[in-house]
Image 1: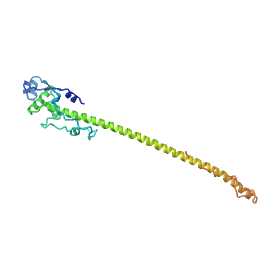
Image 2 (image 1 turned 30 degrees about the horizontal axis):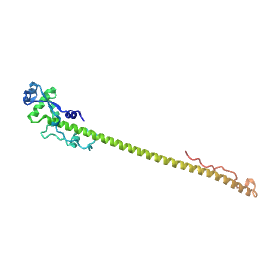
Image 3 (image 1 turned 120 degrees about the vertical axis):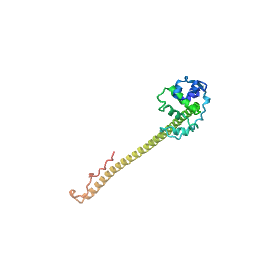
Image 4 (image 1 turned 45 degrees about the vertical axis):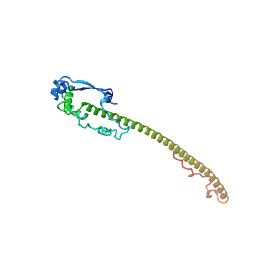
Length: 232
């Protein structure tokens, strides 16, 4: 909860002008400056009505710069008389008041509010509603953050598991292929041995009829028959 809402929850002690005091009859910055100092008056928390907090979720993006959408979503509107906290802020920062002391500026604004028949508590209540809307918005986005983090962490674990499962499958396929290649290489080596023996048998048979230099059977020659080595 923001500081303003915290103050209000305990009751607010505002500097307001008592209508029966000389300060209550002052109008404008000059008259307020010469009037008797502002009289503090306690405003209990129950005097400042505020709507219930908005839903725990918010459709407003977290990256917004202007909180107008937050206030709108929370149902915070400018008071009917038009004197909300933003208007008062503009008055306090206006050229005629910005260079004056805090007390004089406050008296001048209070005088303007009195002339407009606006209770300063309406301004405070507007600020409190906005503060609560901001608190609720922050809480909603914090909840979204926690939910997103939990969701993403779960998905990361799933992906890691899928990756490990796939890696296990790939490694098994690699070993199968390597074993198949090694088996084929051994089979080829055995084929070479059998082939050489068969050629020797053929050579011996033909040698009975043809002299050695002219024997067409190349017994025992394994040149060019070495199987290629598998790549790593």
